[in-house]
Length: 391
Image 1 (tube, rainbow, N blue to C red):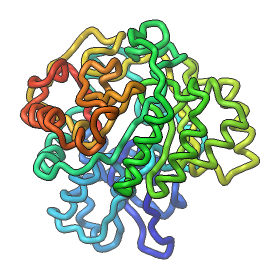
Image 2: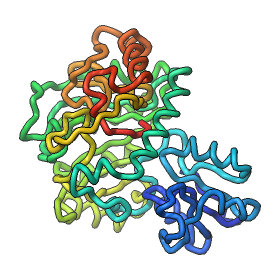
Image 3: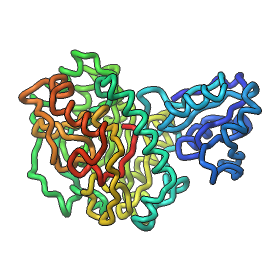
Image 4: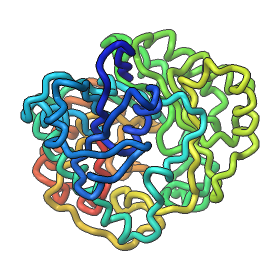
């Protein structure tokens, strides 16, 4: 996260959305004068009490303000500013950033982005078309260069105690045979990452509840010792958290995200206890976020596997960025296509048989990247997937 010196000029924030609000909260209200957004429906309205203007309107003030780009799609937005002639701008996020760059303990994402009530409403979101364009252009550069992954998920146990309606491996429908990763396999993965001086994201979570594995704190402690420059985070539904486990994890991790699943957005008991603890330990606010989530809501199709999605739209010519950025490892050592491949339908290697680098740069991953560069229709059910994240 980038913070602009308080003695510098005033700021315009490019991105009137969830991350724009996060950036806004880092400054006194009078420090930010405008929001900038490409969405014509937002222009002329107000966000966080500030007027939203277009990039072209912002040109009139380009010598008076610093522009802070607050979006997951910052690369293209920075290029846009350069093409328009702006010179004083920067990105709010570092290259490998946190998921919730805020000092607010409790975040309600529905304030900025209301939950979709129907599948049609989800698919008609204006930001979806924008995300598709951004992913398409980003993959162009990644396909040419094919860098090392900057996000690795190690699923040490393939079980979850949640019943979220959108999840293909929730407790009620999980088709996977139970598997638990051996300690030797976990240590081997970390040691291989240590050898390449890994600096990207690292987590012991994927399509599961990580605290179902009683070794999870010890595993993260081991990883922290051997990967001092990695950005370590963990997602959990919080149901198994105690204050003791919470303290232990916050001493290790860079970021702990607790998805508080409760349909009325009320805090569950462990989160209430954590809220009280954090009131007396404000130093934790920079690394802990409780996110209010609904267990029953419409989200992405996850490649056609989401149980509560039936109305699929095809995206045959769209690209996907995930195989260019993610390494997803299951408890058996299998490397899955991406985080949306929750059941491990597509296996691209096994770390018991090959090294991380041999798998990442191997023929299966190369084939997947070529197929998804050419279009989602070329790989499995990917044409039905409406996940357009930047990885």
